[in-house]
Length: 302
Image (cartoon, rainbow, N blue to C red; front, side):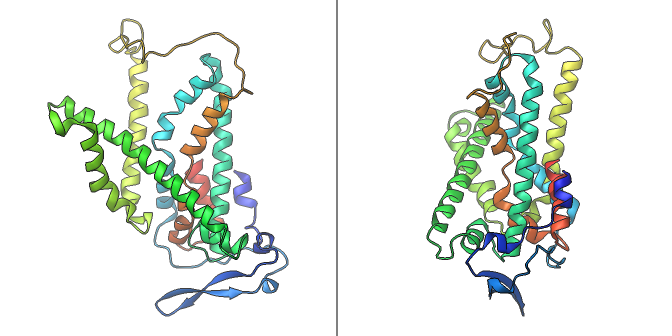
């Protein structure tokens, strides 16, 4: 956390040995890129000045970032802990691994936003072209990788929401096509998801993000309440789970350094993945500066 607040933004020259980079030049009606010779960069890293342009407040941006992380990946983490070990004492090393992934993800999220702003890039692909390969050839691979990740995320959310909606419709008496999983997935993709992915900025989603965060908190509180009143204990209302859904515990020693621990690390890294939107978060942050963006990153990932 301290590294977020005290580390100055990286020197652009450290990422651009032998290349010319770009900067944003204000013009009437918008911005355009203007070439910035490498020799004109300062020899030491200097903080970027605060700039106007963003409309989202720092708390609102932090809430939106929290909702980015509190997706389906968070609720799948118990499965990752079970992949590590069935011993309840595995919760401590698992929590350390999850916290470490959160710190690394938060810091790289901060670096992504700051570097993209420093070189005048609208996304990770443009930042790669400006800082690594000015020819743009390898940048196509970066763009393809980003598209693959985004497509995978959209597909996974579609599957989860399709299953949830079809189960709910079936529970209230819907039959046939209305309760089918395929129809639910197509309907969700056409109605809520298509307009959402067409948004150019996450600013409009801030109120919905706050509601989503509160819903996650409500779920945790509800489960904790049921645990406290003994609903999951033997003889409780929800004690009779199917054998496939019931948890399995053991007293076997916990071994952290094993291949199965990578399942938990991968799930945690996916849950913390908000880096594709880091340039947008920086651009939409009111009076944006590396310091304010660092505070937003700490609040969002902390």
